[in-house]
Image (tube, rainbow, N blue to C red):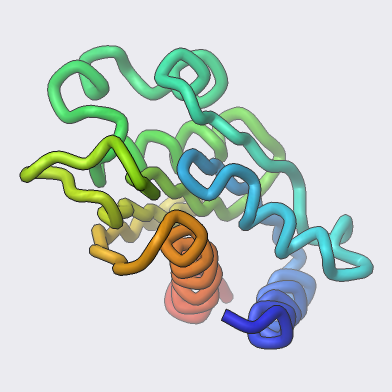
Length: 165
């Protein structure tokens, strides 16, 4: 992933959010702030980037985003439903209008047969709409995190195009 590619995608997000007077919030686990960094690397992003939550531990997901203990116990931190709860919680705990959430297994450890290294769950939400997906990325920890940041950003562009006027 080139920084130039990410920068152009972030510019697209910023322009789209400015055009509709909306702000975005991010809720990150396996990306460790990479999405927020990519967005705030852009000068002027304070006009459309509201805040970011880096919730690496289960307790932080519950305390900061309202992810339920039941979800974490039954589905685990890496599940599409956890990503959905993270996205919804980020909206509820911010002044933003649109959210993106990411949780996954970047490796090199932590994978299982059911949830292998490279499995990453995404969710995008606004007040009325929700979209989510789970993808399997290849590569080492750095590559998986970079692919996850890129997917989160591309997914946000798609979500804005589909749901925000």
